[in-house]
Length: 165
Image (cartoon, rainbow, N blue to C red; front, side):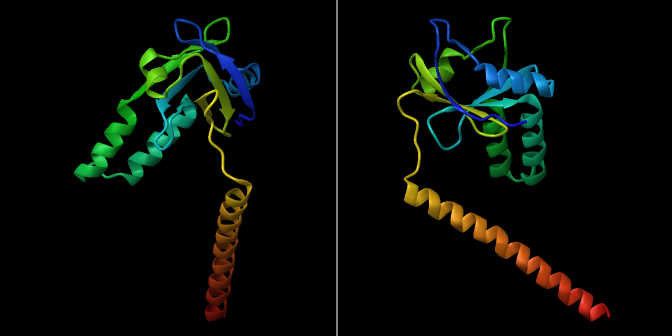
């Protein structure tokens, strides 16, 4: 499931917005019927998760965060308690609760941004991006880190094979 694109839209007086048709097609092809909405952890925006993506995230978080560590349990609780499940009506709209719109600083104009397996909802006029220089630097560091990890794994595997021979 891959959501791609950057699409402007508007919410109506009730907080309803048309989910872009391209995103609805991706959901339909994946058999997804509803989404989970929450505020982003880092930015002033909202994130829509297909239920299957949300459930996988919850499973991963539950594995990583201990129920027996007070701070970790509070972090998990904070993350999962401030969500709402949203459906798509017959017209292709989602209802964004007023409290979520206000928390993200959204009045009427919004921007849907496909982020691969999730969809971000930004106030239309405040989407943040990186400078080309910072963008290139972050990608270079991340990709080189992955490349270095693969090379280290190959070297380790070669050493293990040599000691077994």
